[in-house]
Image 1: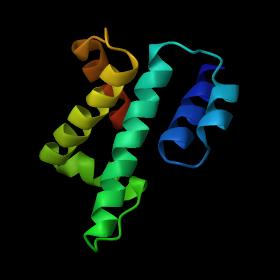
Image 2: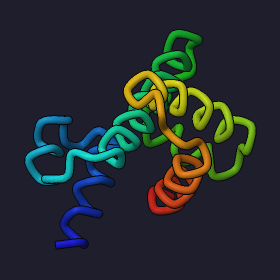
Image 3: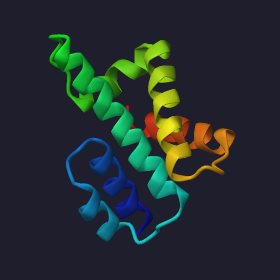
Length: 108
């Protein structure tokens, strides 16, 4: 089951499946779902901004660039954490930072 959830998380973060499909596959409705949604939304918003600037980049491109660009990775983290705080005002930044680090490492 863990492998299926990991695969579902990766597909959701990469935009292969939508949020409803992800929620059906992932029965957990705890902070990790909020964390994953925040990471996905932050990555997508950076991709959209780059498209507006004429740089055609998909969420997968942003994920790839984050591996080499620590400033971009930090910017994505900060935006994602802002999203997390909106949904979970009591969220712990260190817990999210660990989740973000582990998740982005899986995506590379």
